[in-house]
Length: 125
Image 1 (spheres, one colour):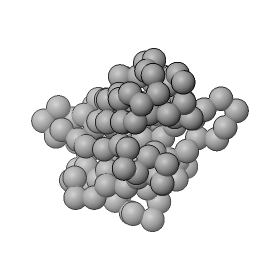
Image 2 (spheres, one colour):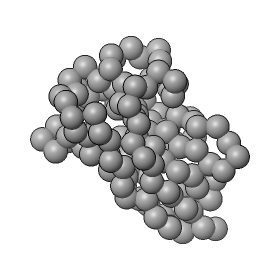
Image 3 (tube, helix red, strand yellow):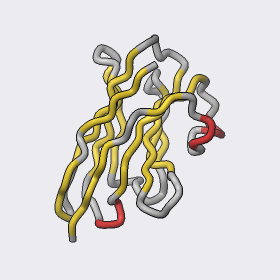
Image 4 (cartoon, one colour):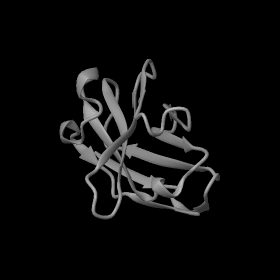
């Protein structure tokens, strides 16, 4: 399984970015796709997740209402649209895949099997 994250960059506070995660190597039916982020000196934290079926989405409290996670089955790609960005959103954003749609674990990085390389998001004030 390969996950390729892209779309990061420098944006001013209040701006928007759309991150993409291109997934390959297998079919992802029954998987959960997640986005996590890690700021310098901090632990990796959950941002959002989606069942590959699209039937359910999950958001962190900090990103709920400011972000939308979606997927395009035809392109095997998961997106994270982030709006109203704040300087505290600055981090490296990682996409991840987990086999099994157990909702209780979707917010925990340690339960994900595959990780992309990360894309840097910098929000200036």
